Length: 411
Ligand SMILES: *Cc1c(COP(=O)(O)O)cnc(C)c1O
Image 1 (tube, rainbow, N blue to C red):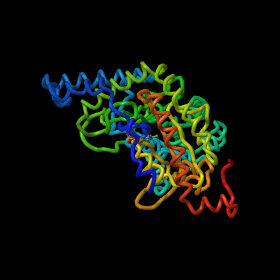
Image 2: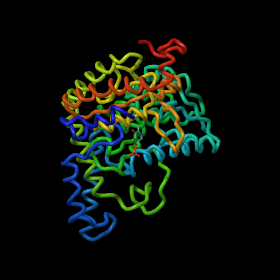
Image 3: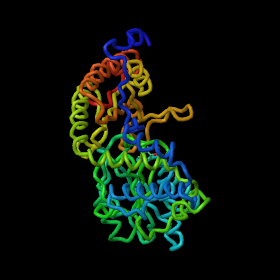
Image 4: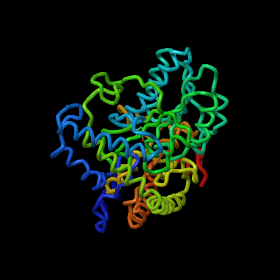
């Protein structure tokens, strides 16, 4: 790829600039430290009756209480899972089973959910459920009235994500929760991008079920939580022992659970100051990248996760942009995930109405409180050059410049 690659990394900056915190986060030192005793000394099985097991069981219970306290739940409403995906699967399947027993087989969701939700719904559709995916507005928001209008007598579940993982838009969860409560329909929210980043209170926000994942808030990977309001009978996804009050078999991942509790407490305790710092960096990035001609910001500017930046640049491929950014030491993501060799553009960008061609040229930068102003300036030096370079070698772009094809995004 010519000149840009030859230039290589800036000598001043040969460390990694990590701007992909929506994909995963670096573990916090406190969370790592919290895990160690449960690998080194208190490594018993919490189901064992002797002291060494019981000490692990007590730690588990305290983690359950600490986690519940972070979002207004009680310990008995917390179910540990292997992560956000499993929590989403279990929440949706449980609500479907509850509905089925009452002859209610209509489920409302949205077109831009995470695949853990969409693929579970697809499976239920094959099993005879009717799945209604609400349209998402161009700004990445769903209006509560869309939910109200869609609810029917036979609706058993509304599942709408708290904040979108690609474009960062924050949904009107309180309002949607209130509508569901009034109509007696279960409400689940995939809060994987929100937990630890936005204030959550399951009672005040009328949330019946909620999914979260530790590795999105500086905790360990492979551990998450399904919150289910007291009285909601869950369906097992993993059959086995009587762990998690019989709702999730398998010996508990005690170290990871303790790491998750510490990471969540830490994230919630520092939420305000972290948000302030990250917002400043994010807004600088948005301001700088907006200057690139024929570009568009995806997702609402106001109702947006503090760390999320997502742009489409006309005339380029997201993958090429990512490779050239990687060459400069910048870790970012593009919506157009190259799944199984096919270059499908992001379902999220298509859901907000971006044409295929535009959706292909997307870039997501997701920041955290550890990013610096210097890093943001470095990104702002790098991205416009790479976009210009990629446009320069694109036959499609040349046609547009010559007027043979129309531009899809304004200058
Ligand atoms: C990351 C993510 C998930 C999946 O969580 P895992 O713990 O990786 O399984 C689900 N939903 C959203 C919105 C996510 O960002």
